[in-house]
Image (cartoon, rainbow, N blue to C red; front, side, top):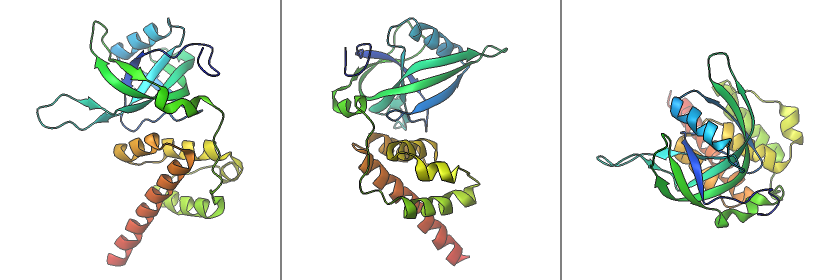
Length: 216
């Protein structure tokens, strides 16, 4: 048994490469699966005790090289699934832990599997993190300025009351940043580091928009 889990973390898991998709501690990620290879992956995963799928971002490969995967991903346990009339599967992944991808295996299965290590992310298996330096009021004001021109909406009362980790991780997963920026948020060691990075990305976007307005 590992930490609070009712199963041992395996050293090999199925991989689901998806740009921009993050799975951060104690978050949930809804997914729609329709490709035959990933339907097969889901079928195989549901037969395991752990029911884990590793979400990992593809990264740009150099010319002539095969598609590469980011070295850090997030593993989620399939906790709900429903099948649509046209054969698609709607699933929900509950985040368990981030992992380090040490080797990608291509075997008889039509999907990728990876050898993984968990020890760098032991904190993920503990309770929620807090961010004692989080100044929520000014942060939410900047967030509103960021979201408005992008026609993004949120429940501001819920955002004001949400726990630090829930708010910061949800925004890191949902806001429209580029895949490399998303990867940096995923790899942030602590919640405070992730929040600082998130604020930096929002500040940079706002500064760029202000500069463009002045040039017009």
